[in-house]
Image (cartoon, rainbow, N blue to C red):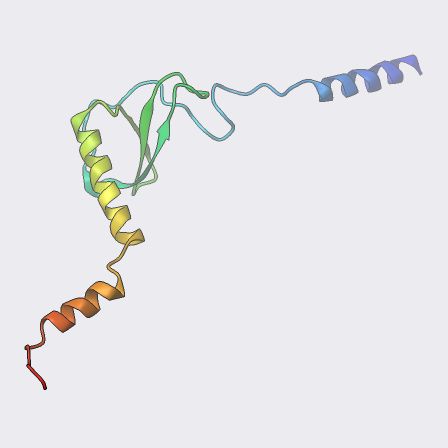
Length: 117
């Protein structure tokens, strides 16, 4: 009987201990080094930023490719800054399309001027 009680108490104590995990949050692998090869812009479908102030040890941009790969890059690299600028432009075009007001103004400007009494 005492063996059962000890096993029960032990399992309860173990369940209260914090779960240990690999370096980085669950389902997330931290970048530990940067790629040396520039990634063609046509392969990039998105990105996230990794901060050394959180869980991971280095600051990085993690690009997601069309082939579901993750590519770690340094924001200090020129090709990374250029890719981020292009992605930002694409996002702005999607989220801020030309307003109807601009279209109406353009149509009225293209009409010939008439002087009516």
